[in-house]
Amino acid sequence: MRRQYGELQLALFLNASEHHCARYDSVIVNGNLSWQDRLNNYNLPFFLASTGIFTNYTVRSLRSSQILLLTKMQWRSHYPALSAQYFLSLSPEILSSAITPRPSQKTFQHIYVGIDIWGRGCHGGGGFGAFRALDHISPDQMGLSAAIFGQAWTWESEQDKDGWNWNKWWDYESSLWVGPTTELSEISLPEMEWKEGEEHCNHDPFTPITAFFPRHSPPDPSDIRFHTTFCPGTGLSWFVEGRKVFESLNGWTDVDKQTNIGDMLWPHPTLYWDEEREGKIPSASVQFHMDDAWNAGNSLCVTVSCPGSDDELAAYRPLWLPVQSLCLTPRKTYQASVTYKVNMIDDGAETEFALSLRKLPESQDDIVCNITPGSEQDVANGWTKLIIEFNISSHGDAPSFVCIGVIIAVVTSSPVEPVQVSILLGELNVSPLLSPSYTQDESLIQWADYTRESLKPISGTISWEIASTFPAVNSRITSPEDPIPAWNSQTKIPWFPSFLYFNIYAQPFHDQFNVGKVDEAIWIGTSGAGLTGKHRSFTVFHVNLPFEVPAGKVRFYVQGVSNCGEVMKWDRCAFVDVSY
Image 1 (cartoon, helix red, strand yellow):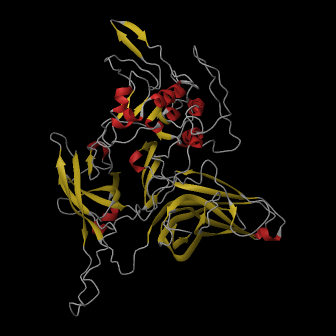
Image 2 (cartoon, rainbow, N blue to C red; image 1 turned 180 degrees about the vertical axis):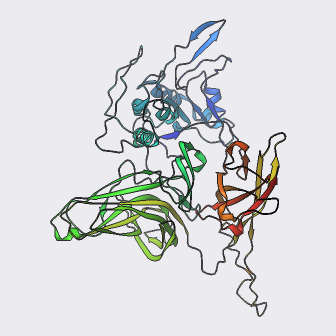
Image 3 (cartoon, rainbow, N blue to C red; image 1 turned 120 degrees about the vertical axis):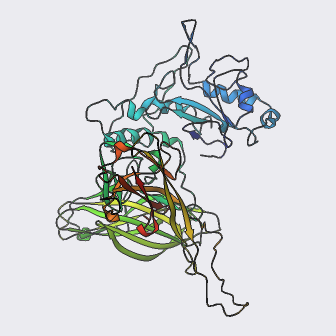
């Protein structure tokens, strides 16, 4: 996350690479291991030779000749200020003369002050007290960056307690980052422990980590398609086009499957009237729904609660719910789609659903959203896909920030009775609208292969390659002066197929020559970084096959899911037969 000068920068981890070579505060100039917990002369040469420094975040210990030596350096409240003061004492020539992978003038932002969420030696006690450390690094005080270590604290500190599950973890996780998911939740703060020589300081009540950062929308969808299944990278099941193909008693985790979860929905979704109207606005809540999804492992369940009312207008309550902020180019046309399902609706009520855009609630910019209704179709397993086209108008050509969301209208025959409606949001996509003259290239999986592991029956690695078919050539060219191209290359649009992941299926042969229909194949996993670190491979373990192989032969299918969430049709997929 890059900021202008004076704003806070966050790094969840830093490591050395050709693009970002960061220095950790450990070894000093004489070669000794001595954590400083701040920037000073002992670690300055390393800072100058790198793109940034990650200051030590915790008390460290060493063993030498069986004698435990404990460093006396600990994170104190005034250390960020000391780092800033020392930085300001350095001459501009020193700060700009170092050779780095990306030479640039050093700023406060290149100093990442380490914060340990476990609280080991860190000011504020870690956990829900980590904000106390951020108070001393915040934009309105220091403008330094922060490197946060040990975020798994939200799971690891609670995982052995009775009744712990994914939903309770998410409440804990979101409380740390964005605040409690319910307004009545209370946060238990750790006691402050003052270190020797540390000045006492006061802190406001609990502040979530993201409160220290400005909102940043994803890139313009005309540059990078926006796609999300609202998956936090965890789940209890796996779904393909609304069909549950896998279920786990203990759940699964896979950061490769993590997508945006709707930055306008957390910690509390906010409803607005979709038209000029007075009166109390109904309330809304949102949570991950692990029991049903379109693709991936979950959907978002949005519940709207309407109180009883004797107002005659209450029979029809049109509500606008912002879901995700977007950065858009004025006068460029986009296409958006949402896949949704009505999950629950009280008797005597009906609901109308639409996809729409508005400028951000806090925005003062003069932005107009122009929307063209598109198509609506039932896709599969009770899910519906809604498509719209839109563009925005504003002064100038600079990118503008808006939010995409849903209109949920609640219609009741007797509004005096309270009603609830819940909608499942399964997938959201935003991309540039292609010209009608553009013929979409069709992607396919060109081949699939299998590499057997020696001495291990039915264990090995499936690998594959993708390809794209070229559009048909225009055969109606009448002369060399014909202005219509033989094919529309659309060079500004990435032409080669891009996939989010690949679903892998397996099917046993009945005998050496016959296998069942493809829709009878059993899902066995998805590709990803995984064990191999490769996107286009999948490791098969015999113990994980969900069936016996009486004929000694198995067919494995590879099915792609595109970067806009489209599941590849079977006739574009590939398979490989393996005998044992």
